[in-house]
Image 1: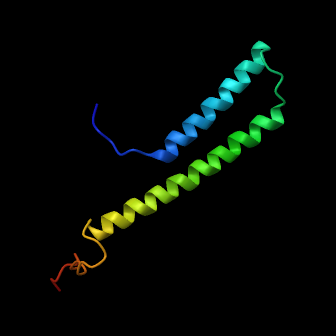
Image 2: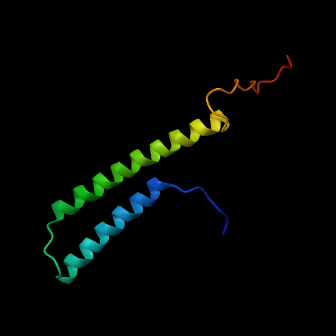
Length: 85
């Protein structure tokens, strides 16, 4: 399997949906008496939180790519536009 970037937003979304599924499974087997209106907001809130985490992760990685990993004191990169006219 090829290596890929760690994506914390997707991990969080998976964990939240797995937790919601486990709660529904426990309710279906009779282990707990869980009203539906508690799980739905939990899942929706978790997905919103995962979206925010994903956007923050994207912004941080985009900033690091633009910076080139050199820090803020580095001179600006030359543009990649063609000089042929």
